[in-house]
Amino acid sequence: MTPISFIIFGATGDLMHEKLLPALAALFSRGNVHEDSHIIAVGRRDYTTEDYLKHAQSRVEKEVDFELLNRVVTYVKIDVSDANTYGAIGDVIPENGHDRIFYLAVPPRLFPVITQGLSVSNLLENANPNHRIIYEKPYGENLENARQINDAICKYVRETEIYRIDHYLGKEMMQTLLALRFANKIFEHVWDRSSIDTVTIVAKESIGVKDRGPYFDQIGALKDMVQSHLLQMAALVAMEEPKSMDASAIRDEKVKVLGAISIDPHSIVMGQYDGYLNERGVAEGSTTETAVYFKACLNNERFLDVPFYFLTGKMLSEKRSEIIIKFKPHSKASKYYQTLNLMPNELRIKVAPEEGATIQFNVKKPGIEDAIKAKDFTYVHSEEAIGNIPEAYEKLLLEVVHERPTLFTRWDEIETAWKIIDEIKHKAKAPKPYLGSESFESLLEAHRLEVGHDLRCVYDDPSGDDRL
Image: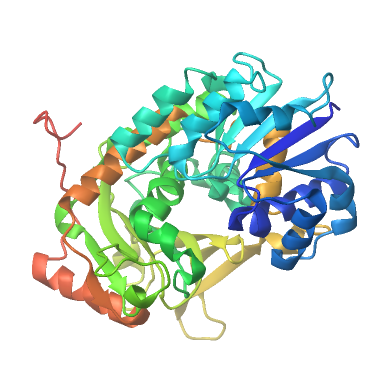
């Protein structure tokens, strides 16, 4: 096991306090990293290491071993726009023997600035496999901006050393989804348009933006949730079986799915919850959306004509992220069960807050009468775990330590996803106000009645050849 120097930019930000420090402390305490590893917290505030850790302890809400962090954390103040100040980081990195993992938990506009600063100060060496760099989402603000950022950073670091993080891919059920699909014979011949009726991908939150107003108002729900999380979930559902389970093969199949997505422009609904304009840091008269709904279809053989529904938003009825795969009615149901109300089979893959899977079957009710009822069979991931289940960021950081990029997004995935987001943004109308979940659902229902609730897939292919 090789010692690691974790160099974290944005060390005084919310992500560091809420996710990264607890995750790193857990890795150190469990012995997942070499005992000589350490953390360099980089920020612009005029702190000593002692001051920084006192401030962090006042902000971290999770139970964290700060005695351990006192031993392994060093705070360094620099001006990221001045490459001459980066030497302060080099002063606390051991000269030999440590791998270097740089984590940029900063706005995307600073990605090229910091990457260049690290390179010209010889802290980050191009083509050095022992040097890796993590970029926190969002990776850019739109397709053009993302391309500019990527072109700029690739002057200093190779794609193989880049880890673009999407914490949803670190969740256990996102990884279990691959096992459900490819390790179970019962799904092998039903995971396509002959058996699947619809796919719904949901990421709902019951709270507003809280203290993230300044950030969220620049991004919105579409870029914050759909560009990364929801499209990645769709890619894992719809991808073909990869040639192998290595990173390149899985990413190749995900890119194919993203490239095959066609948005129904008439289905797009944007909403903004009542009270959003009064949130701290939100611009006066902001038109940023806090909820998004749309339908998409895949122009590929496996899922041709199967609608994919996407829904995400804040101030909705509950905190829930899941994938709902609804199967078609049984082809022989009308023959054998003419008078009984059979429900379509349904598979729910639960991602948050509880992780697990539920499949709905039709079963006979106990008794002398011929009666059928729908029954759920549920797997709860936490019931199978021994000890604490690692958080997504713990898993992802450890994947970087072991140089395993499967759970990270490659550039062509990012680029293709941004094409989809830019298209939706271009075709969407201004967000409509809503008051809670029921209000937004009423908006959706009114919109369906207005445009017609047509489940057929509508392809918008500029080439004119819009079907396989």
